[in-house]
Every structure is written in structure tokens, then in C-alpha cells.
Image (cartoon, rainbow, N blue to C red; front, side, top):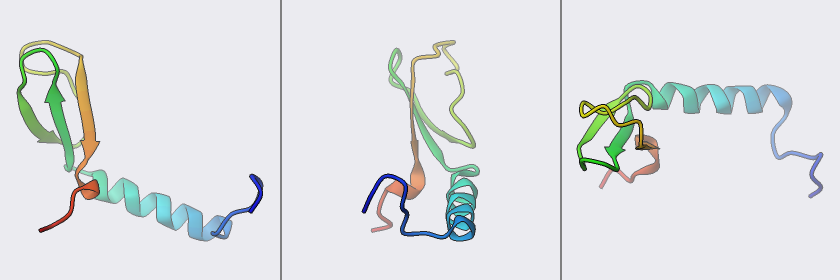
Length: 65
């Protein structure tokens, strides 16, 4: 497979990307590198301690079990 080819048609790719966006709504695990606070939000956001050093991981990446 070359760089210009894809497993998806352009429409399938848009649908797949939309599905990922929907999965991320209210489902982003945020972890503050400064104070170690962890929370779930709809996007990466500053910590309650004011730090912007946040690790943000979409929750769909974690298994359900």
C-alpha cells in the first residue's frame, strides 16, 4: 500500500473520523502531570491546580473489561 492509497473510501474515512469524534465526547481521560489529579472531560483542559501540563487520552482506547 502506498502513502496515497487508503483502506477507506473518502466517505468511509469521514464516517470513521466522525465515529471517533463522537466517542471522544465527554470521554477524555485527563491526568495532571503537576498534582497527579485525574478526571474525565470532553476535551483536554487545564487542571484545577491551574497547570496546563495535562496528559489527555481518549477513553475509547481502553478495553471495557
